[in-house]
Length: 491
Image (cartoon, rainbow, N blue to C red; front, side, top):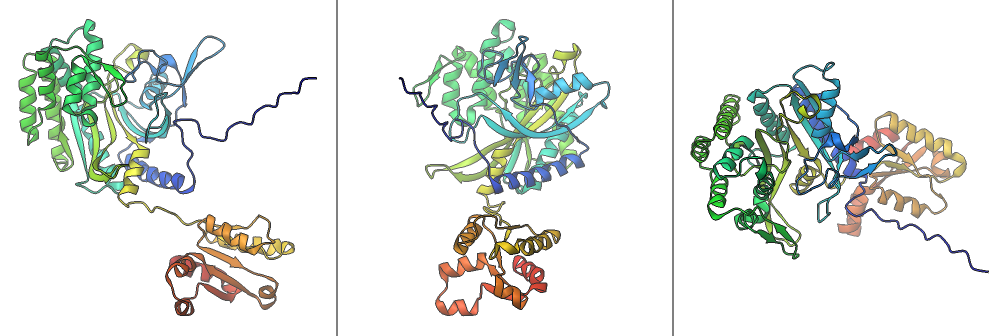
């Protein structure tokens, strides 16, 4: 008789490209998002939570480096034949929401949203398939004042979470200017769409690949360090010169940069219109007090997504950090966005102007940690130890008293036989305090309060004599427990 084949146990491992987030990771992110929400709210934006799942048709084909509508996203087919997908950003769902509910929404409609998005891309170091975004958008106005406001709000947001002025810059460009450059380079027309797409993606990789890498992608193509080859746009030398000249157009002042851009797009109506929009945004920001120390015009900003139609912007952190090999490098981009006047039109048939920005939450949080703006660790709860199972009600009364005073606390719920294991548990929880009440303490009406943080420091550095002068455990009357805990936490 054949043996029944056992079902193998599933592997306890995180799927490739995904991550688990514990304790302080979650609370630090929540605290940062709360500060961002305060700024957005102050600017008059309302919160929106939309579905994490959209139809593939609603999401559209806008991701860079993909060729199929459901490539680059996590998609599946329903029994009725419809394809659904997890959202890859927050903007495409907003277009669907606005088109669906536009009769009930104010116009313009200002909204912000926060949550995870998913991209079915090749994962790598620091590159995950699920990550958080925090967006703010204005739908229903073509005014450049909306774009200027988004950039000003982004500057205020970065400062509100702890990025000092001088440690960031918000760079602005306009896709119309780039379209004008394409026209001058002979890349206008529907038959040139594939080449334009490659050029856009190449320019967007300037920071990562450098000018030589971009130049290769404008031509025949580029082989990366792994040996993978990326096809280029196939431009001639003269065409590539025009595009590279556009990326090198930044000058010392915004006015000089605009003048250079106007030269590059001379003869292109769409290009000259884009230059005019940049001038208007710069004037509005200057009037509001947002100078070049915070916001600049920079032609190298393109943004990879295909739905942008006008101004585009990117927030870059300018301070240095060390990479995994210990080499210094700039931290880089943490936010970006732009104007997308045709996205809602896909649903309504009528142009609905819109503009917005998206913050990469995980990258911004990593930047705050890298610069010490966020504590590396947060304290866990006060742990009330259990010396006698029969007196669990007493311990629950203690923890209830602490919680009602606003102090995070818990009763040890494991096996209480080994007291050392209870203190090991408290250490693992990063608890600041352990409270002890055995039978003797109960009879005398006292509790022992152990300062675990100070105790750990003393154990690391102090001599025996210093232990006497700096006690880390206190005996206090039971009625004074709360006051002593507050005193230790305050210290």
